[in-house]
Length: 238
Image (cartoon, rainbow, N blue to C red; front, side, top):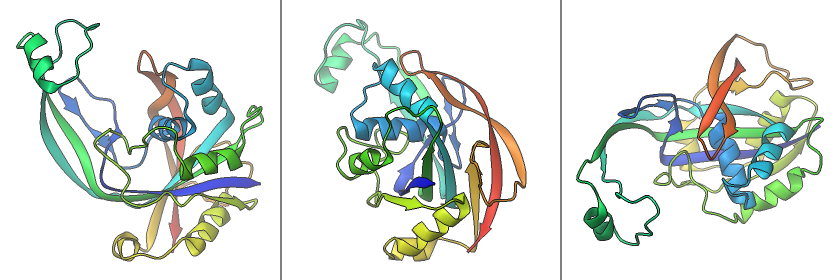
């Protein structure tokens, strides 16, 4: 069974977690919506392309192995929205001139030095999806990829690989053996790695320690709506 495996490291990342308008928390592990959004951006699928977004959603399942959760930091963020939504504004000065004067205040959470390995595989409903094409898109993205928010750019190459193994656990371990060594990985990777995965893998090779529900299953990118899904939690000793 083929798996598309790649790494995610950022000086700062933010994996969106349900919150109010003022509080913008972050998961410790990458969310499904963030990873599908990253794949879509690399593949040139726009948010307005509901059919393309839905094809990724139904055609792919994923797991993510968190090697370092990173340290949480919080940012006090202000934004002054333009008064006329349809006005095309080029500079920040123009935004302020058009603004109502009612700034939006938020506290946004980020994680510093987060390192994870993402793994995707196809479902029976994947139709024309190709993991090989997605790999090439990660190497040469159509749109600029980011890790949760536009301000969070990748700090290391994705280094995507196709690993043909029956077991999800084995696919991850082979990838870790093949990827280039670096000071970042030696500093961040511990002896125990947390693995979060969807329960539809035919042979995970992982023992489910617990499970939880996460509200990160995309319904509409236009309306920014999500629904709950079940997620298994396992651990790998390195």
